[in-house]
Image (cartoon, rainbow, N blue to C red; front, side, top):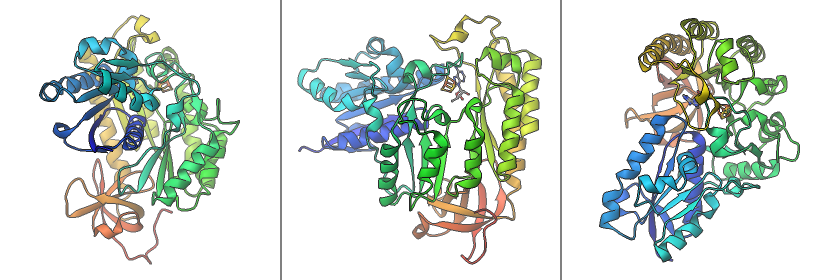
Length: 448
Ligand code: 5AD
Ligand code: SF4
């Protein structure tokens, strides 16, 4: 088999990252080797995101930049996958005329065949149908060499239809994988040196509503919690309306389950939550957080918020700030509302001017910075169990790892520590990371 080079670029969420890892593994079987150099590639895949307009624009402008390479090498194949490909289908070819392949979110398994067809005929191909069963879900991903942590997609799609969100339109209805397939994948990962798995799904806590043979998410967590070699389990993303007491109990019962939950609230105003079709109230959200903290006092809670949803008044926005002050999130991702074609919110009037969205975003981010720093500072002086991931992004002389609460910790140490869980005393807290000193093994950790 000739050696060929694949350059893959990924936009968007963890599921897209995991899909790209599947694409790399699948194409390796056809002789493609991944490269960081687009200039030497025989095949370029851009895995796109469409959650907000800005993400869509970024993906298109990146695709546009490959024109020169296509002109230089007419045999170069350019493929577009992911959510924007699903959304735009054939029309993407109008926007990027030198595109060879557009493949949708259910069509990853067809990519090798599409590539062969394009190589033979030079005719562009578009595949964006939804399928049942979703074969793409079962492709084994290849985490990058030397990874300590891996993603495992357990379900895909969403039936919630939040009024602002394109995901149900682009990933299709909820489909869960069989528990036996997931546990086999996690066992294989554990055997290859992976110590931490993050279970992925658009709405991961409704795992089991279709296609898993009746098993529900807490049962899946408890089962994975017994797999030898897996020290840490995380999952994302959870919906507040589906956060059951049984799932909350897992934070106390399943030792490997890390003390962190990402629980997007989106707004602190009951009126806006209703217009968003979120299916819960601010009171319900606050009660769930209280319950989480009762069962697991150490838990970190992070969230997503959208500002400037149609009709959001100053009072509604105040209610979001008020909820933030009550919860004191460990971290928060905030976004300006972006209108997406095909979603119910398009029909709502009382749009919020860009200037107001920007002001609200800045105000919210300022408040969150205070909370993040306050929460991070509470770790100063504690000794934390840190799973070492590799060399720090900040400095080549430092190593980097994570606490169970998902905080990045930088410290002096050798690369022989990669993959080990070691006690690190936290000396200084920053907004985006902690700094610490490695302790002798006999010093006990404050956390598990
Ligand atoms: N505009 C702005 N933010 C959005 N999100 C989803 N759809 C939109 C939109 N149309 C945000 C939500 C979600 C996160 C992944 O992206 O906060 O939780
Ligand atoms: Fe989008 Fe709502 Fe589904 Fe999350 S739960 S993917 S925000 S529709």
